Structures are given as structure tokens and as C-alpha cells.
Length: 187
Image (tube, rainbow, N blue to C red; front, top):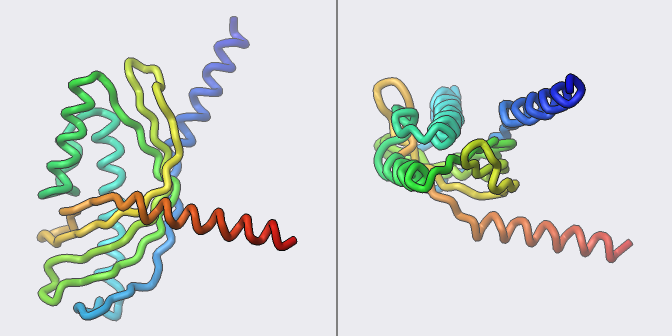
């Protein structure tokens, strides 16, 4: 009995550790066309990236616990409303979702002339588990491309829009697969 308990404890501890790991983050140089330039010291870019990644932590906690209060202050506007709707639906059907983001590939692509919004693209890889009553109903790795619009407050940047672009991510995956197959065929 002790061996079985030890094995169960090890598996549980291992899976919790995997979900608790910090994601790898790659920040590409900004690609701003026709918009305001970021400050040369990089303060704005660092703050936006920091606050965006913190928003993912809040989203993970909120969706796992089904508590909209955990979305504040990182999410506002449309992003908050959509996530609150997801939480309401999950609660209604008795599930919760656990996300473990593994990597973020970020690039700022727009900074409004007035400095009131920044748009970034996030090519993210994460694991998703749908759980009901302690039982994992589904688990899958996801590669997605998100468009995020952040707006400043007195103390931080908040996510106003967080919109997945699954077609772009799938197209990237498909072209990557085609390149791999072409290389293998050429050998």
C-alpha cells in the first residue's frame, strides 16, 4: 500500500510541477509601422511585456478556480468580458480549465500616437486540461497566435483585447511541417 501511495504522490507532484513551471519567453524587436516609437531606454516595452505575462498568470488562476475576481486588474473591457463569460459557462456545466503556458514569442507591432494603446502578437504554446470533479476530461497541447491590445493605467498596462488567431498559428504549423517533409525528402 505504501508503494502505491508513493507512486501516486510522485505522479501528482510531477504533474503539478510541470504545470507550475515558468514559460520561456522570447521577445522579438518591435516592428512598428506608422505608429509612435517606443522609448529608447526600453522602459515601456519591458513594462508591457511584464504586465502581459502577469495577465496570463491571472487568467490561469481565474479559469482554474472559476473566479472572475482573479481577472482584475490585469483584464478590462472586451478581454475581461469574454473571459468572464467563459468562467460563467464553465461554472454552469461544472468544469474548470487548467492552462500551463510553455512559451511565448512576443512582438510589439503598434504603439498608438497618443500612447494610449499597444498591440502585440504572441505566438504561444500551452497545455490545456479540462477538469470536472477532479477528473481530467481532456488534455491537449495548443499552439496559437494571439493578438493583444494593452492600455495604460496609473500603475500598469492592462489587457483590453485578447483575441486568438488560430488560422495563423495553424498555417505556421502547416508550413513548418511542409518544410520538414521537404528536408526529409531531399535527403
